Length: 196
Length: 270
Image 1 (cartoon, chains in turn blue, green):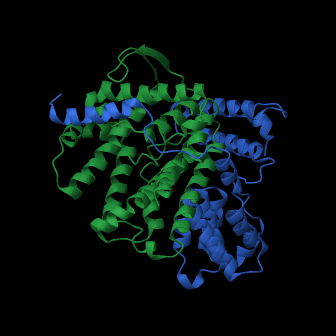
Image 2 (tube, rainbow over the protein chains, first blue to last red):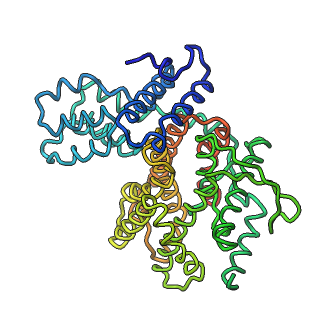
Image 3 (cartoon, rainbow over the protein chains, first blue to last red):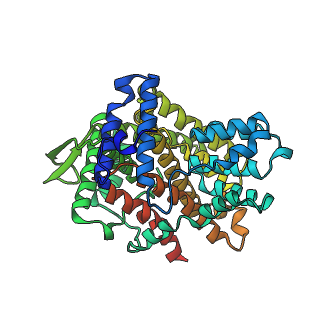
């Protein structure tokens, strides 16, 4: 893979703002409206995305994109095709397809690995609660699996950043924000009566 | 829409409050110019979030226009961008289906709905992807409600899809996967918060609520809080991942703090 800084066109000591600006610029360049749906544009977008992720993930305790475990591929070598398909889908961040592949696997075959993969796919789509539940189940079924334990722990405890950030704000109050809100309410009543 | 995606005024700088208002008023103007005075009454804070998000992401500062309106008869300054119009359309799309659903449930007549339905074909033609997504979601939610689904996780997952496409103005562009993920997180949070807020009323009136069964649990409140926090956390993760700058403080204020105002209000009542 090319050097991520080179892909984005920034120097190694670029600030976060400069990185974001560069990413936005690249996004405009590879906009589907300008490039159609060409495979070249798609792969360029993937490269830019991967470069941005790598740079942004550096030094962050909670990484947005999980570096999906290498070891799982080896252990799934003997498993059926659906498992392999799910792993590949997750690798390529096609989480909805991964879930489809996993749902095609019958209940009796849903082992620790199945729940681990399910958790990853749910997490990829942003369904944190479902991911947590599945990760817990994976550990329950295979308590000795370090990768499963680490993933579960990350989901359970790895997002304290949210609570800390939340506490740095004053407690919010729920009330009328603007005067226009009241005016709109009145207008709404009026408008339902007149035929304008 | 639900109305929980609001700012925490206390912690927003003066400049940011001005920026928020400029986009908010820009949306109002876009709504009234295309949909009349009736259209402007549909304005929500939820769609303002989307406008601020997209305006920042696509570097669309638009134009600042000095004008006046019925709420600001002397002086008004609003910002008009490409996304003022896009979000105005999205607001009408969402209000249309939400009203249809309400009228079906309550059996009342709505002048407002009749007015909006005139624009339905146009919206469907211009935004087929978003139209289908909103329609399918409302349909599915309806079906599940009829079966009295008591799985709030499932219901909020379905509801998450309500905003999935609305958050994506350009299909398949570099930001589309993050934007749809953020849309899902916001959709999920809003649904859960709304259901939690309405629970007492629904128990009394014996109307549908996904939390009725769960309410009996001793740790019910903690459970709801965890569900909400998970959705909010994912929204925050996605927000932090997007290359936002101009409106980042405002959006962070909303995601990290403002969205909890409804929950706080409910807490203070009990």
